[in-house]
Length: 283
Image 1 (cartoon, rainbow, N blue to C red):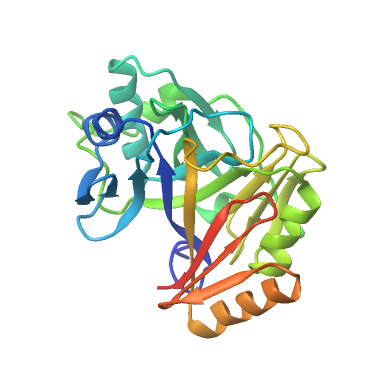
Image 2 (tube, rainbow, N blue to C red):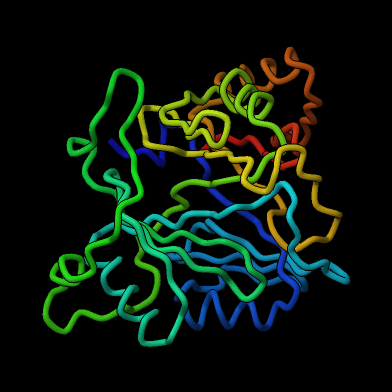
């Protein structure tokens, strides 16, 4: 099962605001190994395969630094192979990048920040057959990552050569100001299902029984304000639907829930109750 193409509804692209494009590009291309697909003034589209942009950067006029608001917790880059994760782990360690790391049972993950403090997860999935389900809930935890075992997956002489071609936007984790309204937006509105949760704290939601395409939390505080326009952090994200019918159904559900939905030029835009901007498209 490929959880990042039809029939899955998934996050296909994330756009973030940065304060200094030159510094950000040095980080994302020079360190992480993305390639520039397109550059237009204050906007840069990044790619792993020279065809599709999964991440883009925008430099607002007079960018405002990150504060405790709703918005981006982290976006998560999914690598195709375990050896890719091992290679970038060594690469980042050699470059003295401060890292967090976890084994989540369903995946193995690194955590780091870009120069503006935007949260990034880089991870690899275990095979779905290795995941444990209790009814509709998938078992996830935060255990220490076994670095020694991870590095053993490298072939002799294998080194980080930049983002591999099969890299995709794996999931998006958001700060929200209120759990019930956020979960309602993403489940009853966008059509995802809750597959794991820390009651009152965080919820993990997906389609097609993935461990999560979207997660939300209130770790910046219940009632956290929305970021000011031009703030560093999330600008918008794209949710891909398998077809027009499923996209239109989601748009109608959002409207029925009382959310404003703007449709024009083949894209549909709505905002979750915490102000996070979602663009709904089809593949």
